Image (tube, rainbow, N blue to C red; front, side):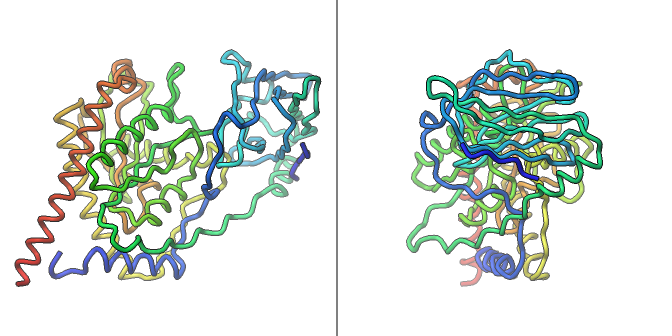
Length: 420
C-alpha cells in the first residue's frame, strides 16, 4: 500500500550494423528503463530540508525533517532489500552532518535527487516494518514538518505491503531519430557515475559522485574546445540517473564513444592504487573485476528501483555482428586509453580488465568504464581531488579520444584506397 499525503572491407560497415541494431531495438530489444530525464530548475528554487531527527519509541521509529514549505509526499515499503521509499518533489537537502542515522530497526537512511522533478529518502531496514504514518504538516513561519513513522512488523505483513506497493515497469523509451543532416562532429557521451540519492563510494566527507562529476565536466570542456566533438553528459549535476537511462543516452545520441567515469574503493587493502580501464565481457578477467561489476550493477537498487538488465535478442545474426564490431572498436580504444593514461598518471598493476558491466551493454556503441583510482587509498584520494592531477588525467583521456578517431579515419581511408 502507498502512503501519500497531499502537501572495414569484407565486413558490414559500422553504419549498417548500427542501423541493424536500432531496427532490432525497435522490434523488441529493450533495456529495462528507469525514470526518464527531463529539464530541471535551479537547485536554489527547490524546497529545503533541514533538521533531521531519527527517534525510537518502543517498537516504532520516527524520522522527521523540517521543510521550508509543505510538499506532497508518497511513501511505500520495498523488499529485497528491505527498505522504505519516500518520494517528494525535488528538494535541496541541507541535513546536519552529525544527524543520527540509525535507530532500532532502521540501519541507515540516505537522500538526494532522483529525477528532474523528484527527490527520494530511502530508509534501510534491518527488520521488517510497516508505515504507520506519513505526514507533512504546516508549522509556524510557513514551514512544513515531514514525519515518517514506522512500526516493527512480521515478515508476512511486510511482504504483503511490499507487493501492494510494487511500481509497474516503465515503458522502454523510443529510438531517437537520426542525427541532424550536416553534423560531422563525432559524438562522445561521458557518463559520470552515481549521483543524487546514490553517492557511490564515500570516504570521510568526499563522495565518488562529486569526484567523477568534476572530472566529467572537465573532460567535456576539453573535448569540445577542439571543435571536433559534440559531447553529451548523462548527468551534469547532482541527480540520479538509472543504468538503463545511461545506456539509452548513448544509443539515442548514436554515440561514437561512451566513457563511464568512476572511482573505486577497496577498504581491506588501502595500499592498492591506480587507475583501471574496464570493458564489458560475459566472463570477468578476475575476481576483483567481477566484484566491482556486481557493485556497480546495483546502482539502481541504491535508489530504490526494482529494475534489472533484460535484453531480448530479436535480430539474431545482425545484432551479433553489431556486438562483435563494437567489441573490436572498444578494445582498440581501451588499449589506447591505457597507454595514454599510463604516460600521465599511476595505473593499477592490471590496468586493463573486463567484466559484465550493465552500463557498458549497448550493442552498437563502443563503451569503456574508467576507474580513476581508489578512494580507499589516502594517496589516490588526495590526487582525485587535485585540480592539477585532474588536468593531467583529462588531457590523457582527451588524447586517447583524438588518437582513436584519427586511427579510425586512417583505416577508412586505407580501405577506400584498396577498393580503388
